[in-house]
Length: 103
Length: 433
Image 1 (cartoon, chains in turn blue, purple):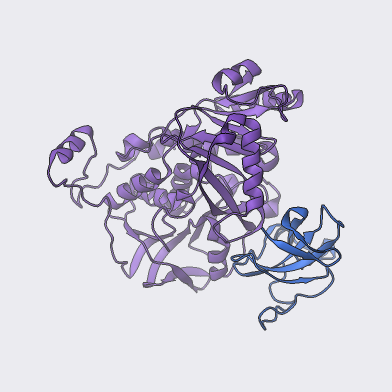
Image 2 (image 1 turned 180 degrees about the vertical axis):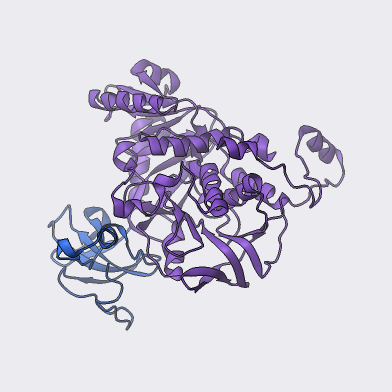
């Protein structure tokens, strides 16, 4: 069972939340300049990391707000909770630049 | 397929006679003071070079190796396995086999698998304990039954057996289901595939391993792949914990770790990995002789030959590589069991475990060439890889041997994500995987 620290409501049980998958995926554009392969990558390809993943969660059975979580996909440990518009936070001193690996 | 069946090669006996298992052999060994059973496959060290290297000695990898030898005469093959063969999802699933899919592409794929399963025990001389005990999906409203009528007609048109059941026939087949007035999901009827059932999951891996080994194929366990040597856009070798192994073709059959191996090869896949739980109850006398899936809760259940109830349900819906599940989903699945079968509420849970499944947006697998030349993909089976093992192996072997996708596999290539020709079984089959 995950204990998720909602930025607005505080720590709540996992069952109150819904995971929205990988975050920081930038929509390519403008649309008429984007080829099918780029659209396919944007829509379907994911980093799917074994380790720290930056992902969106929604407090679906609470305040209904979206926010970001940095979570280890092996241990499930939550390393950081941050706002939707914030960049990826460093984890264990490692910086995850916006340019690198963003979908 | 007919041509491939016709050209099927006989098992290669140059590496010693295949030790056929039989009742006479069982008797002979059983009466000896020291039974003469020998290991069913060798434990070779990897050579420096193979024509084909298959990564992953689960069902799909081992079946690919076997059909490379059987259908195409290619035996210069190694199957590399990080752990022990059949120790990943092949050994963690709920052993259901079926082909009750809606779309023609899926029907061809999964029914090929089921037809191959139907002859597999005899072909491999290994008892895979296939039990075609049927699978019922329950319907809980008039709308469910309308949708099942549609699905049933589609399956019949696709050549897959399917029957609509009214409430009384569901009750006759599964009398312990909750038909009471207080049922949360009252049963209106169901849809049945009689050829569906269960098979012994470990035996499928072991049978393919033994048969591939008899053809001279090397199955190398405790040999994790740590990287790929790619020269001029083409794979040249795999780097492993046991040294560099050169190969003309590399096939990835690694279920929950496809994104990881793709990352080592420098490309990304349209896959997300999730934990899927399964569990078994304590063993009891026979109470259920079919497989039942209750769609409103996504829970399904069958009884194993040992008497345990084998229970599955939905995914833990966040990405995970932890091969275990979390309690909320387990509780939801068990709540669904008790709702559907009130009598099972008295049973104790004996074991619970999890495996990591590759989920694709359209809930259909990825079969065909990878973005790196010389590399072939067999992945993205989601929660339903076990039932597809013979077809996954057959089709991947065809791709490796001929360089072209088999007609059954052609719609399942990576190209479908850019072309938009998705095979959206998530919506069509009503199955969450």
